[in-house]
Image (cartoon, rainbow, N blue to C red):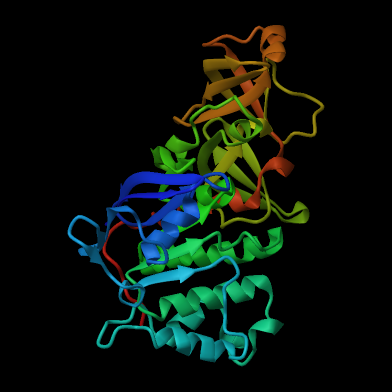
Length: 376
């Protein structure tokens, strides 16, 4: 269990936020300057609140009313920075050992060094020094170092922000394994919707130091905001289906959904694997007739249930067979020209090339919010 309620005032910024989570992966999402990193530092003890309370499990880390403030080295918070911050003069093995040296004496390990090395796929790197590693490799080693300190919670502050798209795709499965195999409570800080959609069991959305929404990813990102370009790009729908076949020649996977087939970029799972894909509203087009002669591979049949208009924009939400809802961002002119109204049958079109591979998650293992597990 994670419970956070803190206020911290600075000359040009004030954080005043409260939230809680049962466990799993809690994502802090928001634009730069919204307070995400400040919360992460308060959790780790790198910042001190003016007032507030922080609890992880059965341990009170901060309670200003009771004058409790557990020192950084006793909090057992594993912190992973954006750039990893490995010790450059040490090998990977020595960096891992350095992390292990911070484990409390007599404290049960979350995982043994061999298990961490296997979990993160860094066995071939043990003799290397940080300068010779790729960005993704450095972050995996940084995560391993944090795990070997036997933390009660893992806090990751924009761990993929400095990596290119390919490195991000390489490291995301390792973070998923941490979430699913260790069941270690995790706070994941990011402004990347695709990463949050894939990893989070709960999302806390921040703006200007305040919590503006919290809940499951599908709930938080379904909120329709049309005022700014950022708000429009952050309207996201979640579609769940089953992989039915691989188009190996073209490097694609076909997902069966009650509304039709969804073609995904890349190879995901095996036939029968349950998958979830996050789709931005800006990547959905609507058609009033069955599409013909188009490059778009995915056309889902549904019914319009809501139209929200503001300025030049309109968000049209479509109910799909099976229970999913998909929102498309159009112009008000398009809505008028097509005569779109609630209850109208419609076809929702999604370009395969517009789907971000980071936003495709396996649903085979439901992320745990229960007690921690240990690896041998």
